[in-house]
Image (tube, rainbow, N blue to C red; front, side):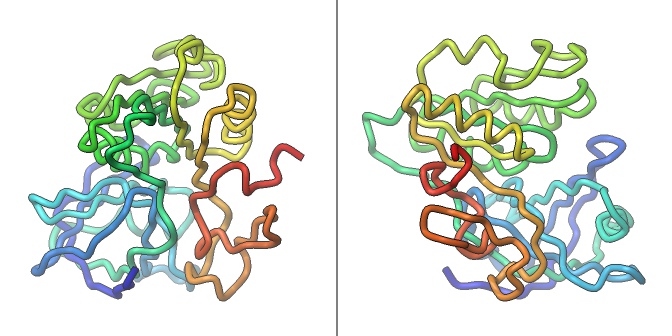
Length: 259
């Protein structure tokens, strides 16, 4: 897929929580094709300590409004600098990067989809859920956080499927981790997951036990986003692969997690 370097205009900056903002970006021309699970490398201007671009998952693409949404977790100086963006500012982006989730159409066998996310890992699942619903799939979101304030965009997720929630402190949904939720007694045709690695490994174990196809979007530390710097390498059944170029989405059968 062709990649672009674009100066996108900031259309909105929405505060989702104390630690998260939603950037809505647009352009004067139609945005390029982007797939659920792909990501963007953004240039951080105005930071004296940030020299490399920051990788951010594509949260949603609104074709009607010609908007690209990026959910930013403010964890360092670079991402905190992005919080200072204002409407009509520009953000330089390289996009779309990586390989996305496998979204099949016309498959009668694959109907019931379970999308499992934790923390900021829920971000790519919104766009994925929208695409799966458009293809006639029955979508269930299973979202987890430490507390209610950490579970984001619930109103939007509800537009595209059933939403199940877990929180570690029990302030929203069922108390515990996503792998403890009662919805897992149901059967699903495929699982997609993104979030902290321990959570995804637990989801992968569940999928393997139930013999369910599962794709995971890895969150290895990235720098270049193009497979040149090798800082995001993951050991796989095919050897060492760059998550930014060969992923970030992998079928769990390609990963060595179960070993």
